Image (cartoon, rainbow, N blue to C red; front, side, top):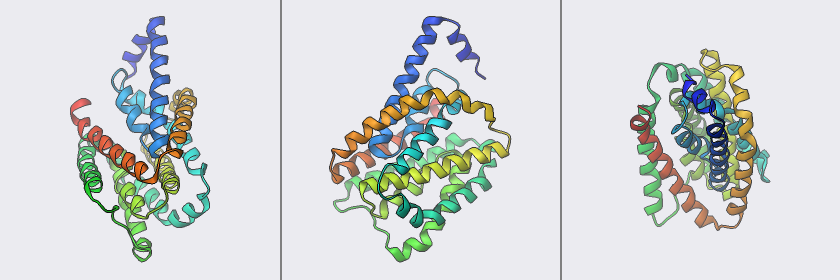
Length: 263
């Protein structure tokens, strides 16, 4: 499945060009993640998929996605508070993902992602158009909604490989500060990444040796993320919310385009 990439690398000029593309793509993807707290897999897969097989592109994402999410989680003052508040949601994400991970192999995830993309666009567009802040979940509702949202997110993650819905809008509704929200997203994406990798490995769809392919992408992703965090520190909470919601729309557009681009 990597034949097209091998052909590209036979020519030294093209091979050097390929490494340059990888460098720029992961810097850009890391930058988007640094500003909004999400988007590294989406940006990377969308761009890498234009000139290499998708399984190869996915293999490149495992380690940088994990490392940047861990960094995102621990770069901030509220990591203990975030974990203590969301641990039950994270537990249900793991359970749901492991239970549904076999579906990712048996169904077409592109069309499942299409539905998620539509929902994401509708949610973000409504939040942008609303003059008041997005829906706020009270503490009483959070106690029982948190595991429910975690379980649903886990099942969707296992079935589609996409772990933004409904976790992202739910976390935003908890009214974290912008830095706390980014940390909460980092926790959710870290848990989802590990759970999905474990689920696929248990079903024979992921080989341990593939991890070595993604190590080279860590440094440019971290460099881009560092730059993005610098930008995020300089913008207001209102501007951050707008950037966050606009990126959700971009993410939704990418999701609904998958059946047509990757068919």
